Amino acid sequence: MHCAAAMLGEAGRSRVSGVDISFRPLAITDLENIVQWMLDDCVRRWWYPHQETEEEIRAEWEPRVRGEPNDEDKTDRYVVSVDAIDIGIIQTSDFADYPDHAAEMQIADAAGVDVLIGLPEWRNRGVGTALIRKFVNEVIFANPAIQRCTIDPHPENRPAIRAYEKVGFRYVRTFRSMVENVDIYLMVMDRPVT
Ligand SMILES: CC(C)(COP(=O)(O)OP(=O)(O)OC[C@H]1O[C@@H](n2cnc3c(N)ncnc32)[C@H](O)[C@@H]1OP(=O)(O)O)[C@@H](O)C(=O)NCCC(=O)NCCS
Image 1 (cartoon, helix red, strand yellow):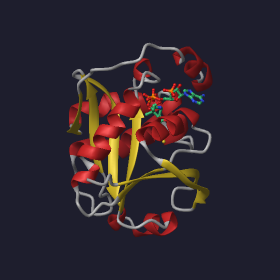
Image 2 (spheres, protein in one colour):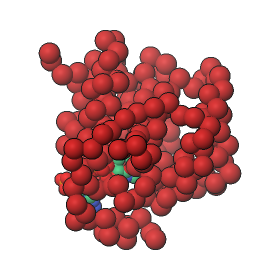
Image 3 (tube, rainbow, N blue to C red):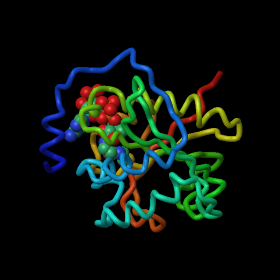
Image 4 (cartoon, rainbow, N blue to C red):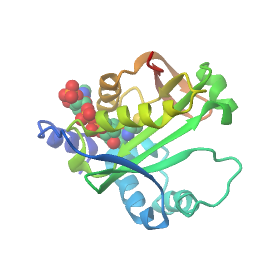
């Protein structure tokens, strides 16, 4: 089913509350789930906008789930589980490890976050908002050097932008990323004052 039609079908779903959300590092046994999640229309549209094939997606994720050393890849990736059901991926990168990205973002002392819920039945029920909030507070801001967190949806990804607003991200600006070769609706959230 096309993504737009799927999203219409997802509207009005029952909200989810009181669930146990957890994050764990990727394992080789996650590879098939991850490839299937990436092939979902609503995920692929935003995570692989350049028409990458299933083989290309698999080739990109296989070394990641195997934990193979890669000097250029400093991103920390986790599987998200809700009540012990694996539903998607969340990842974070410290801008200090990606100077080209940091330069075009024009934000210092920051880390970025990317997320997807690969199982359609878990989208549009409030789970994304809850899991991003938990991840930002418990994982990203656990690093005292990180003063702010960014997230960079495509400007047309309305459900994502709405979810990020609910978490507390605020809009900064829209621009064309030369690093990623995509349009970015840049949002940022400052470390909470304690
Ligand atoms: C983005 C994502 C993580 C958000 O998680 P989620 O659990 O679906 O989000 P939530 O249910 O917490 O919030 C979604 C909000 O968008 C709203 N929404 C849904 N479709 C919408 C649309 N077409 N236009 C505007 N808002 C829309 C929902 O009503 C909800 O807002 P509300 O609670 O005020 O009613 C998830 O949808 C996802 O993984 N999507 C596919 C991959 C993706 O887009 N990843 C992000 C790339 S930046």
